[in-house]
Amino acid sequence: MNNNLPVAIIGGGPVGLAAAAHLVQKKESFILFELGNQVGTNFLDYHHVRLFSPWKYNIDKAAKELLLKHEIPLPSENELPLGGEIVSQYLKPLSKLPEFKPHIHLNSKVISIGRKGLDKLKSNDREKIPFMIHVQEGSEYKMYEAKAVIDATGTWQNPNPIGSGGIHANGEKNVENQIYYGIPDVLNKDRKRYEGKTTLVVGGGHSAINALLELAKLQEQNENTKLVWALRKKKVSEAYGGKENDELPARGELGTRIQKLIQNGKILVHTPMFIHSVQKEANHKMSILGVKDDQNYSIREIDEIISNTGARPNFNMLREIRYASDPSTESVPDLAELIDPNIHSCGTVRPHGEKELRQPEDNFYIIGSKSYGRAPTFLLATGYEQARSVVAYITGDLESAKQVQLELPETGVCSISKSVNKESSNECCVADLSPEKSAVGCCG
Ligand SMILES: Cc1cc2nc3c(=O)[nH]c(=O)nc-3n(C[C@H](O)[C@H](O)[C@H](O)COP(=O)(O)OP(=O)(O)OC[C@H]3O[C@@H](n4cnc5c(N)ncnc54)[C@H](O)[C@@H]3O)c2cc1C
Image 1 (tube, rainbow, N blue to C red):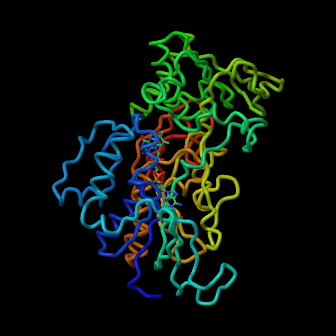
Image 2: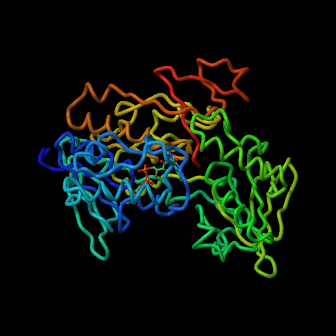
Image 3: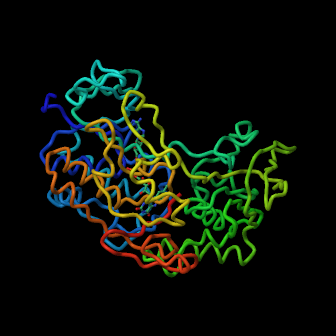
């Protein structure tokens, strides 16, 4: 392998840029491809949403050192940024530093990655052959070589459908212009679409709660704005999270605020609701059909749907790479048992690094939210530690790659862990900040 080749990073989100910062610290060359016209594309999509973790958890350590070296002022540690501020106050200034700017390719969508002249089937000396990265830059297609590849492309751009079976509900595709997959800016840009309308929000995570809280503000200004919430959880209280027990107060408050709105009759809740079809009715209304408590069930007179049913990784560009993913979570295989929502009701994850993230293909890694696959519990701080450890390994600092350290604030909700008495794990706040484990939050 030509050691002068750069490390390629796919994705200019916070974790891809953190990987770049660690490579800069290790004096290793890199090339970063970002499909958007600026870094942080996905945060810009929900620029109006306030994060629940304060700045001190949202900035990577290597990135912070570089910003300080260039005397770029850092935001105040305990403030909660908006999604857009993550870009304007952190990712953008970082990407403009002289150590970064020449190596970042914007408007550059990676289409496929492979080994030079060696398809997936061929094993001979595979690890010694450079990677080839096929990139669409506007109307042009280009090829780049790299000695290692870090895939930090996230999952946000591949939202799950509203159909509870994981495939589109029958008729979902026919009403796509009335479904928003994400968190619309209902108080500003998308106001007209939702004001005075009946909107159904689908999903049981923080994104759904964020969407409902924004809609509730619109309802305060126009009482004809109606809020309906469908989720698969057995009881709506399961969506409230750790509330006052959450070590991130803003995350806990999401649950407290939504509970209050429901108690005050501001939101009509249908749970547990399993959606199987959507029908167009007269006057552009929709009926949502499914099953609730083993009975056929319908929600009628809906104008708009906001889908917050999570997201899934896109593996298309990895067709020629020997990658592995867990069959159910679609996470990096070794992470699955730590984050599988079937095992952990709101996630307890052991700090992890290069060893757990290692793929069958040498020098290829999936990090960031994509490494969690469909699990909704990823936090930035986790991704930064992944980036640090993987870069340490790639650059030959094996000792540092092994020393994984991560302390995250607890969610204050139950988690199932071998060290915890199961009887106490349903409604409790499990305190498990042992060095091997630390709690994570749910963002989906
Ligand atoms: C609404 C919401 C609120 C959240 N709040 C918090 C919070 O308070 N605290 C916290 O710690 N975490 C939070 N998270 C979770 C997590 O921090 C984010 O999901 C974060 O964006 C993950 O970073 P990432 O770099 O892995 O991926 P992303 O930020 O998704 O970045 C991926 C990048 O890759 C680019 N890309 C994708 N495909 C390609 C391609 N083929 N070629 C080139 N580029 C490509 C995208 O354009 C994007 O810029 C939140 C998530 C959501 C959705």
